[in-house]
Length: 408
View 1 (tube, rainbow, N blue to C red):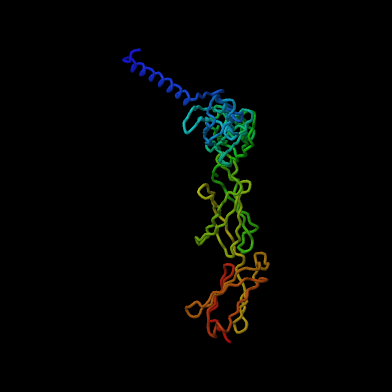
View 2 (view 1 turned 90 degrees about the horizontal axis):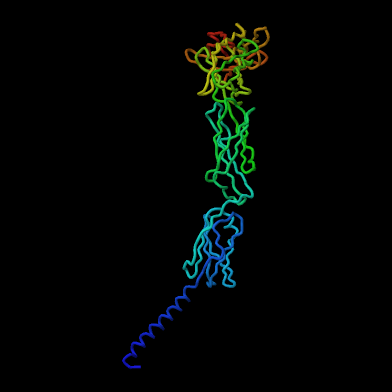
């Protein structure tokens, strides 16, 4: 060999050696990792085991779904790296993303679509509001949430049968789930009553839900009055009653509907009483006046309905009474007062005594009858001796006593 060719031979040998060395190094650094069992779909609750053919003993599996994110350590044996997906991850439907990682580098990645289980369906159902108004405009919404045994929403477009019963009517409707729920508006009927609602999905029935259909707003009504007599005795009771109050659809209004009764007196002052409906009828009471009176009575349900008006007249209980003076005119006895059948007036009948000196009213005393008699006493400490004017009023009758001399 010529020494002139030696550099060329050495150069070729160097290149060949470098190539073979770099080739061996590249193969060693890129250890081949493949998926042994490719899983793309699963059912919630089913076991999921991922296996990889790999020489990377220290690789970990990164798992992520809509509920959690975690790192799993595998089991390495005979160049097979095995990972068991935990129960709390494989029981949730949706997309499970995984990545095989070693030294912060991703070797492989993919995802598994987990579908809801079809072994068992659980139904949650809600209906509201719990009470609606008759007439077909108000409604209660039934919302059904069917899930599998692991609380995953079942597949979209799953059929749900919805039933409702009202009086003699039973109706069935079909809806389909759409992103977790199925729902329907159930409108009221013209009649009032109780509506029962339920839903069925995958042959599993929901609980029974009750919705009350209440009467609509009341319409105008009539009133009447009853009393044992027409005398102003301040003792007996006049009872006011409404007709059966109904809504526009003929339903009796709900028990407890509040009705106000207004009494306009002859002097344009007002009295008020009230009552609540039972079986559509409201009643209220008012004690008789103790003087002759005329009542103009009407009733209303605030902002909704009102009644006709009725006129009641009350007669005087008596037309005259006796007044007696004793103890230097300091003790005044009124009565005995007699009623319309010549009986004594009821205890508690009001008598008024107005005491005046000159043009000034000193005092107005009011006392109640006992056994038909009322007594007033003008004490020395308050009323000095002198001349007074006196007015006694009872039952709408008056007696005047001028120049009444009171002594010690």
